[in-house]
Image (cartoon, rainbow, N blue to C red; front, side):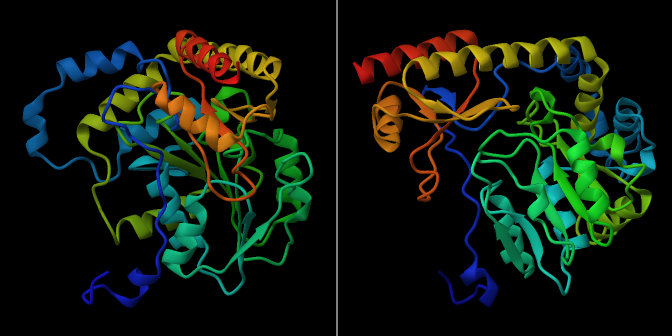
Length: 351
């Protein structure tokens, strides 16, 4: 604490990211992709003209927005890009959710959402998940200052089909509905095709998960031209050059290799299902997942104790300390070898 801080800073409770260990561990705690980026990304890094870095990047990131637009069958004017989806979300909170009415979200979801509410003075209303640990789309009232949820949800992994989201949008006509699709490529349906029908829909995505570019920090949003213009007004009042030249070139190279993208996501999905069956065979309650992680509750050992025992054996998974989540572990899907090592360690611990 410091007397020089603004009063609001004293009251903030910042988001706590997953541990980034310095020692050598099998890292299954922050939902990173176990496979490298598309080969074209490495080619781009090798061939990049470093002299270009003396110049500012395109403030509109037109080349990247065009590539994203082509991939998702929208127009570049319907695309916004930022430094990771966290920045895109932060700008969207400022652009759309500082309203007289509260913003509604699930009680259990991405833990950055409450942080943004506190930072921007947004009143937050949190709704419980249903008895199956699913986001209850029917529970969101129409009298609100916005709705936000992750699909698939984090850390639970459940995803709604596109038409269920369309049903929500039919009821929510007068405020922005933000669907956070950080994990959508691992088995869920994107809501992007609904953007043309619903001008209040904003879909956020990231290059961090399915495209293996977490270290590059690139996120995007797709919505109506009016919503994208609103985020752009906030961005240009904060940082006119968010996407650097190298990041833009690597992202475009990643989008160009659809076959590699599909092979990697299919591999993660296959390993996820093998891991789910292996954990269930060892007494875990595992929630159905459409993401690149599993949310699992051990029944033969206490969740926090298993977390510590795995770490002692060089395996890092994610444990949340809140009472509702404390019995569970969120386990990122790694390579086949990493997941076999995890299962072998669990057998040793539970023996």
